[in-house]
Length: 380
Image: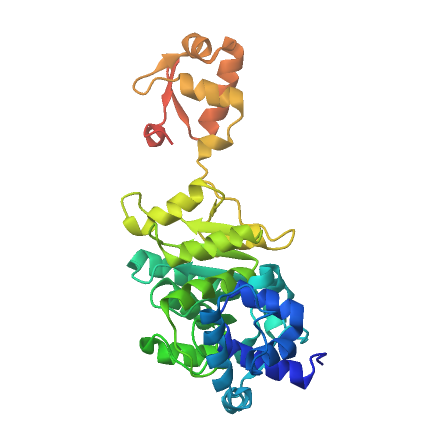
């Protein structure tokens, strides 16, 4: 079911080839004139300069050159041949949280995969981080990916080398759901080394992008892609990132949008974790596994297990018995009155507790004296 007319859809498909992702000026024009109206202004000879006043003639000329070459019917046919589709605001599948980006919201999204993007985005988490990650970073990303997938969360990332790829693989290994947000056309494999991975994601999950079929990535498109990852998800987890990492751009976008921002700590001596640690010193929340992520971004009751060290037998003693036990010397025996004085209690109370401790195997009796049992002299 859709309420988007064919003319509006065709115009939006054309505009994805004319306007760069995140073009806020274009976003304001789109709101003012509508997709079909804006496309007419950009393609009609002599039309536009009076209405499109926010840019100079040179930039407007660049838009016109692109508009003249746009062939939306060809692009729609190309994505359809891949088994994909083009979705835009007004479609049932459009994720409404993308509208939080306001003027920088995508014009539309090119999609490969059978799943419903809107439904998947309602319960999704971004896992991003360094391309040149360490084995620790790859392990943590894969563990988060599989753990979140097992809990019914969709793992969203950018299909890059390093942390992104590890997170996708973790989700796929758990037979879970994962979404790859590309900085190029959904028919373009980038990086080339992830040909098999992106193919698996398209089969088992979703591959999406703002750019039309055939378009290739650029440095600026990678940066702008990150805002879509942040907006699509309930929260962003950063696993290893230097101070100038692109994954921190995703985290900052998530913060601006009111999404949860999390980081996985690493060694204080690792430059690859320096950006994450800076994030954690601010508004980021420290997480170490999928359960902690789900507790933060999930619904009420999705709690991580209580974490604590091992429970020792003496931890189960009542306070008075614990004081009596602590009053015994580490070596040798001591008499009841001395133990009572050390425990701050009466002699009768101390003796009663000593007999209880004897039955539990904590102490031994030697004549009139008491000492720690041989097995307890190590402090347990």
